[in-house]
Length: 208
Image (cartoon, rainbow, N blue to C red; front, side, top):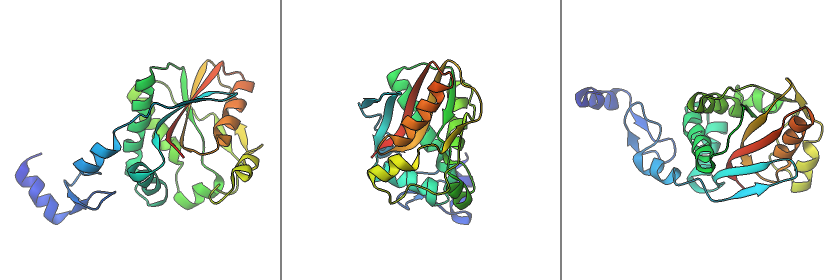
């Protein structure tokens, strides 16, 4: 962009970093400092559960936590590209392969509050980046979010709330934002495997 035009745009359409508030170029989302701090992952952490392997980009703290909350609850839907990059870099780090990409769907309550399926939007960006088809395989019948629940309540809250929309095949990559107890990822992975998926590999933006 022409530097003179950019200077004019900064005055007419001032733009600030979503995370720290610093003035940045008109079409950016984050300042250079926040972007550098945010993209230090993926962390060397893998969890193997009964139903899948789970890979993480980072810990649910500091700027990563702020970015997730700003995207989900702050109306900054453009951050989907930043968070999709975190998933994409995690996939690259571990060099895993899969046949189809899907995601953990938002609850009815979350859809009403936000107006969009948070992980669905991220999944579509990731799909274009890696050239693997993205399919909505799961839907949620949950009527509320899991905010404020204990670990045991979280496990109980996901039982029977996910339903299959289409039959999976081959290896499925399943993405979600925050892994807390693992109840959601495991419930969705179990559903996919029991319906015919050969394997499920899960990728989460953050590990709580």
